[in-house]
Image (spheres, rainbow, N blue to C red):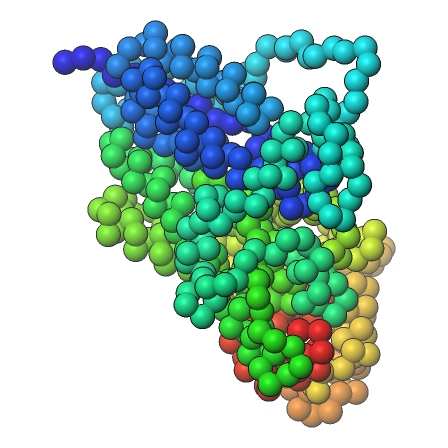
Length: 522
């Protein structure tokens, strides 16, 4: 029996590579280039060395070779080809001789982590006395002087940014072809992807947009649990399909909602898909979505992913008792807010969601509204009360969205919302005095002040606010706050902050008074 060798490699810092552009539209162009590389360039190169592709997607590569020398030579060519086509680097793990497929999968994963940990030797960079730097990414050496778009002047570009701008026009054919096919039915067949962030911003009165970031939990554990190369290959393709299907289902709900709001009004139905995946590589997702439905969109995406992933694994007979979950972060900001900074904020929030998911064994969603220069604040070590919540399960988020409808403008006007929000932020400042702890001060000072605000409400609004205080806190206590490791949290301040962006995708337009008022810009 001839020997087999498992080659494992992964592209480095894909996000940094894709974000190396001044235009958001070029990020999806970069993802298109990565898709072309994985789908076309790698299989062609592997074929020349007798390689058998197991995985070549999202910058992740698992390839079988009959000869060790050919596998090593392929690794060198792969790294050079990736540098030339995408101006990035690839980490290659130590080859694994296949004795047992399951064992080889596990060892290859460990070798890749080890290679990423130790990094690479430093390389010399190009040195030119007189040169122009790319005006788009500010990093690459310019090789072209041209005008890419109608809304900009001629400028210097590196070869990668030039390729990104061209690749942007091919999204429906490769990178987003499957996602497009899942969304565009006969009714929406002529829809195209939006060209820029301004188009998305016009769906919201104050020009807010939202960025969704998602990452599947414990994917290393899931892949390592595969018993054969066939399972590994099947799992990779299943994950990609389920991610895109789940995103498409939530996208269709948004299209139906927007078209329902416009029905009978002065504006025509949508002519574009109101969700733009910017990065969709393996278990990673970064997408531009409408701000006002961003929470319900995220919830539906998570629920759809859990349901479809679990069912797909069972159908393909590779279900091993694991319950697939996903972590999501949502950053809501103005259209002009730099998408690279939004991504950085989202990454920080995603880490918090993943920690909560690991502890609770469920999908988790975190979110934040960025207003002007305020990007949110972190909890101080000594702070015992937090006006907010680290991350939400899909069930908790559904309750939050339901209360948004129950407390709509007719029940809780803006002035009362501001009073409650201010009162919760006041609780965060409670500290110990010589004779009283923060908890005692909350019960003796803060709680009576809250009761005073509630008593000023009419009977029906007061009843609904009290229910929200209990449902979004701890219903078993008389002081509402939820105790987590001796720190007290409450979800109502999150709802008050996210108020304009917590609309439900299931409520009829006529039922939601505030959305109905906004038909002029929907």
